[in-house]
Image: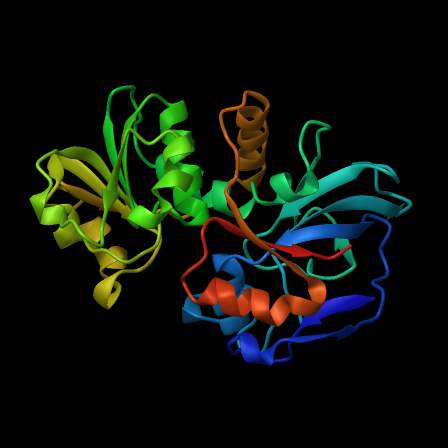
Length: 319
């Protein structure tokens, strides 16, 4: 089978596309013919092994899985003798934030990867773009007590996580200001943001509004900056460790402060997937998709994703 793989940690230049052995399922597993995956920020950690804490999940000395990937959408083509979750012909999608060999024509699923059926009202591309980004977005938001009317500032609104976050916040009745380049306002405004902030021409220090939450969906801010627009009991959350890894220790240092830092350790992927499907069925969520690449173009897909220029999700077409 054709697959996207590598034998060591590194940048997009370590990627190879070629033939790999067809996986053999065990009695409690199923085989999936993969249609599409995404190339996402988790994949960046998988391929680079950075930050180093990532290697506790992906392999310390060398990668645990040579085939890359984290998510997929596809169809069940074989089931083991003791497997009963799905049957041959079922269309399913799944995600594992510790890496899973899904960027291949075939992949195995078992209890270690969260999966769900693909409803008839959504395409494979849409559903797979609702995996990684939505999961991390909801794991920002479920760390705070959301109430209608609260104010949230989303930094990095054009990313897959930020664009999902805007929609989840609006679903919960919050007032949202989204930060991005003015050139992308036309893509972000339809997601429901109440106001858009052009970080290229405006300064956060000049914003007069105060917010209950500052959500950094791209990891390019810091707590000191967020405090300028947080209310006296506001909360700052970032996807990244921050300058000097401050987002690891600030949650402890601010534990008894009025303004707090929370680090969004993600959990419960199945719950995230179910909420994504619920919101999609209610026309309350639509994943933002930037570009599509064929499996033979995987190195270019990774290069683009790692450039920091992507808008929403990057789709990798397998089947």
